[in-house]
Length: 307
Image 1 (cartoon, rainbow, N blue to C red):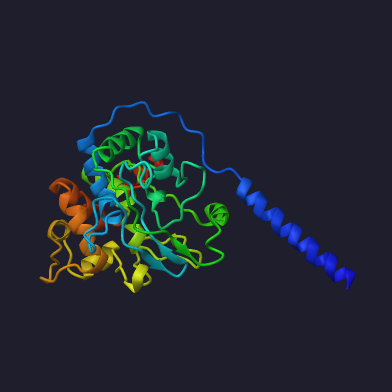
Image 2 (cartoon, rainbow, N blue to C red):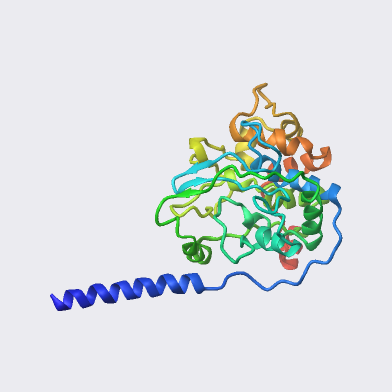
């Protein structure tokens, strides 16, 4: 009996010690301060491209812009996109540009806590200091809203935010959006948007048991929040379904598909609140990238073999 009691006490101590260790485990990197002035107009464009408006506004409930989005129901619990207006109590009025940079590029809150991957920070890792400054300037122009749309309601053990530090170490995949040598400016701009700000893979790529993105991108996802699905957007599948660059660029502006149908579900919101605001060149660049599956290698020797 005493042996069993000692075992229980030891297990409790190890468990408690492990949890305390997770809470104390530092994450993120020490970054230099952002001192650049921002361009609010460019920041507003980036906010549309990055889905900030679509995600953080509950348009179905006619909620104020950026005051918090509709809940996202997942197998791990319900996520509520927070208020990102400049309100000091309910929004991000107390943040700095550096806080915004850390949140977007590293997925870490101002108090050092990891964000859940429902926030697609892995796609924003390549944002430049100028991008952050521009977004900051744009967010400062949004009217502050003194309300919240609710709180996350996570199932145990996912409610233990410190456990996300283990998830980051094992399942986090940062997107690659850097230019590829040998590709056109149009193609590389499309890559920058698709793999970065527009975070197409967040919906159109499947996820594992712990919610991490599959390494095999753009193959479709049948388990989106709320039970909806996103089709494959691999080049071969798009072409088989009759998509051309012109048709895809037009659909990103209007929501109308080559068959005359219209996008539904979350994609309709992406178009309405996001891609319809992009200029024609950027929509065409996205289509160009998605319909051309094979990037040219950046290695000079490999490039030479292709010439």
